[in-house]
Image (cartoon, rainbow, N blue to C red; front, side, top):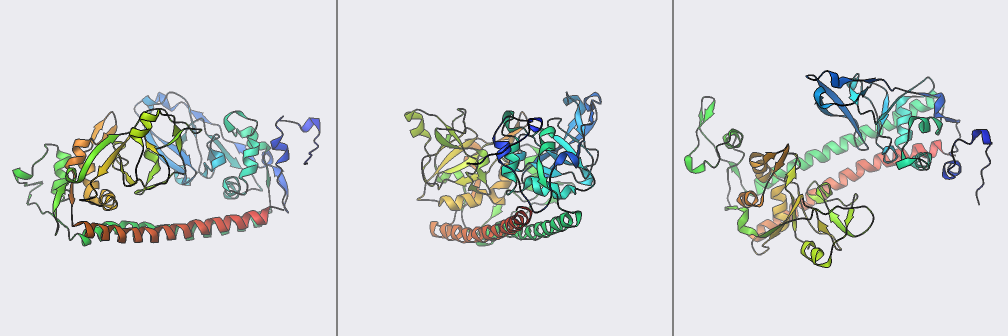
Length: 441
């Protein structure tokens, strides 16, 4: 049994966990209060109604980033003004790594007043404390700091009470340097993976022996045959002018509807994180595959469940959201019972005519991507594609054995990409683990 004795004058909180989860280190372990300050300066930028203001955000993947530009007329509360070199975090999500150092290029930008902004004083490097607070080995202590608060909220006051290892500046500098080297190596590997990923489109074009259809230029305009004229919109026809919609191929070009058995929209019932049937949503489709690391659940009647239950080979299509997210697809290949949400359309493919994995590859290539971008309608700020438009998409349709051959080759390329990305993650995890072992007693 673990027992901790503390003086009443030092008893600032009543939750047990924060006193039992104590960090020990070969270096001095001190409260952050001595080394940090809060930057809570705010401005009523909403008063300048015609001006656009740069608003920052924070995620556990990219750190601090430029989220959007917002006109003053749409801002109804004071925003915090930040300085380059300071740190900021989401007090409700810092325990999952939503913290970052503000780049100098974001100096004097703004962030929501809900975020905590702070800087470091003499004796502590900002990059070092960012590394500690965002690391997996320190995460249990960070979570313990919020265990007695509402919604796991790490306020600046709680952050100030947090005890962290504070090695000499030379040690901090070396730790930061080692981490930056690991990040650089991981970035180079991820860049290599990204380039390999981009090559898939070229590979598919070559396999299908595809070429863009050429149109005659006429000054600043262009000439198109009336038989090819489908819409009056300028944007749509500009895609035609660039040769992004019409392709020639060694194989038959067919409407997608030719190989589809039926469509079905998902359910709009509210999902939760606790119990029920797992439901796949828009955010579960990542890079043409399914990612179920962030999964929600839904309670349905037996009849509703049977109508929405996914079967291996079903193609899921994201029909609405921002233009960049519309058209995301993935093949359902998971074990177990799953249903799907209303933003998704389930496409049943006739596997006697087409291989679902091949069709998924075509959806994630410029062949269909350009068609989606050209025809997706904007409704209340969101792009949309309906089943009629889906059916009209043109796809190259080689014989079934050739489809399967292409799908198999692309799967091998994606396995290679996954291996490169895993190596990049491994570099960061190994370095972070080594830093943790050095700082923990």
